[in-house]
Image (tube, rainbow, N blue to C red; front, side, top):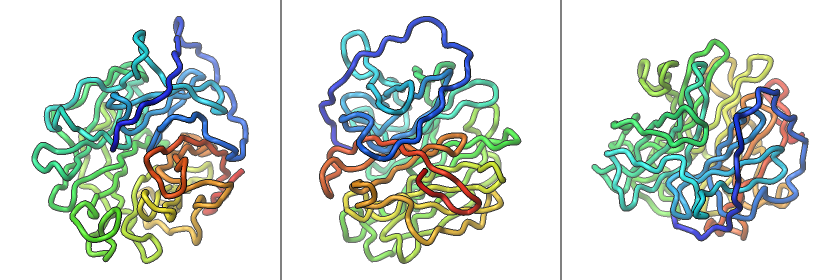
Length: 334
């Protein structure tokens, strides 16, 4: 990803966090971005009444962060010198230090209160492909310490990107991710226009103690179809109140107007998942441009995603939030 100069606002965090319930998220139409800065592939988490967001590498930070009290607007987190605060300033040994290309991070909090940051980064073995890593911290804003080895790292299949953690109701922990088959080549702006390579979404159970030690083998839970273009990616999983698992994902190339946010549902976390007949968000819905890279809140009431500032121009992807309603196997804008 390219590096961009970002406008930043200094955030001062005082004292210990309160133990109060999180403020309710207001239902808001997608009337505009939460902030004007470039903040692609956003993920968010609520901790002690504050919402924290994390994005793809930009502005000199491996993992930029922002915060909000109400998800009506957001401010970038910066240090005392006005530089972007970096959730993971130290890189793992398996990625090049000069160009790690940290993409699409996600943060979850385990039952033992440990925070785990999942991310993808270029591999030292193949600098055109990514592997997925995990890093941990006792604090939501870090600094996160990455593990010495990646997981998973299926380089023969194109690598892996877009990890997202999920804690189920029984406390078991999973990571969904995309096998980046389109990195293996093909025509088109994101490759694989011919559909030669598979880009499945996979599910990996991990240890509930550290969020990263694999339990068993990864399971493919969603595959690209004819309507998905060259790829599916950016998975984010939630379990609704009635026990339905809803898997949000994006289809098509993020550099085009066809990039979207779709979803699939299942009564079992391991699938099979059935795709909705229409995307939840696509270009033109509420004036959005190429809306994707979606992350869903733990309670399934809100999504964050990025959308292009200009048509089919991914150089600035701004963060948006939208209230949703899950009703059985249907998801609607609330």
